[in-house]
Amino acid sequence: MAKAPKASEIDWSNLGFNYMDLPYRFLAHWKDGKWDDGELTEDATLHISEGSTGLHYGQADFEGLKAYRTKNNDIQLFRPDQNAARMHKSCERLLMPAFPEDKFVEAVKSVVKANADYVPPYGTGGTLYLRPLMIGVGGNIGVHPAQEYIFTIFAMPVGAYYKGGVTPTNFTTSYYDRAAPHGTGQSKVGGNYGGSLLPGDEAHKAGYSDVIYLDPATHTKIEEAGSANFFGVTKDNEFVTPKSDSILPSITKKSLLYLAEHNLGMKAIEGDVFIDKLDRFSEAGAMGTAAVIAPIGGIEYKDELHVFYSETEVGPVTQKLYDTLTGIQFGDVEAPEGWIQKVEY
Ligand SMILES: Cc1ncc(COP(=O)(O)O)c(C=O)c1O
Image (cartoon, rainbow, N blue to C red; front, side):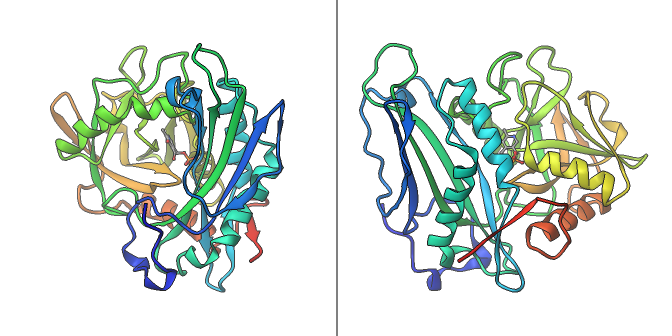
C-alpha cells in the first residue's frame, strides 16, 4: 500500500472519503487480562493469526470521529468522550475488553498530533477522520471470545461522504434489514456493515445515494440510513428523529436534538417516523460524523419518490442546522460546555 502523499501535495478542497496510509497510527494489545499502554507506529499493516475471531466471527467493533482545524489554526475534536463511551458499549455487546475511555481520548489526540500536517486547512471543508478499531485476535476456531485483542486508531483527511455535500440527494427504502429487533443494531460492530454492502450497492446502482432502512419487525417505520441517522423537520417547527433499539445511537443526532431545541428554538422529538406519513415533513436529512448533515431530496418507497423540500435545493432549517453544527465543530460558533476538546500540537 502506497504511503500517503506529502501533506503539501494534497488538494484539500477536493478530498473524497478514501483510505490513506498516514505516517502514524496508535496500536495497543490486550493479553493476559490487560491492555498494554499502546504506542504510535508507522506500520499500517496488522500482523494477526489466521484464527482471529475478528476475521471469522465478526468480533470487531469500531468508531468514527473527526479532528477540525479552526480559523486561528487550532485543532479540535468534537465530543470524543461520546465515541469512547459508545465503543465501550459495543465492546460489552461483543464480549470484548473495552479500552479505558480516558485513554481512548488521549490516544485519539496522540494520533492527531502525530499527523497534524494532515488536518486539512480551515475553510476547505476537509477534516481529519479518525478510525478507532478493535478486533479479537490470536488462534481460535470455536465460536468463543478471543483471548487477545488489538486496538488501533488510524486517520486520514476526508471531504464529503455523500457526493452531493450540502446539495440534496435521493435515498431509497430497502427490502433488506440492517439489523434485527434484538440484534446488534445499536452497536458499531463490523457485522452490521458487512450485511449492508449488498443493499447499499443495489441502491447506488439504481442511482440513489444510500438506503433508508425500515424497522425490522414491521417494515412500517424509518430506522436510519446505511451510515447515518434520519431526521425530518415538520411544518410546526419540530425536529423529529426515529427512536428505536436497533439503530446506532448517533452522536451527531444527540447533538442536533440539543441544538435544534437550544439554538434554533425547535421542539426536538425522538419518536416513530412512519414511512407512509412523510407528508408531515417539510425537510429531511441524514446526519452522522461522516455525512455531517446531508439533505435528503426525496425517498423512494414502493416505486414512488416522496420529495421533501426540493431535489436540488437545501431547505432553510436544514441549512441552519448545518451552519450551527459545523460552526461549532470548526470553532466559529460557541459550543455547549464540554463538547470541544483541543489537541495540543
Ligand atoms: C449506521 C450508522 N448510523 C448512524 C451513524 C452516525 O453516527 P455518528 O453521528 O455518531 O457518527 C453512523 C456512523 O457514522 C452509522 O454507521
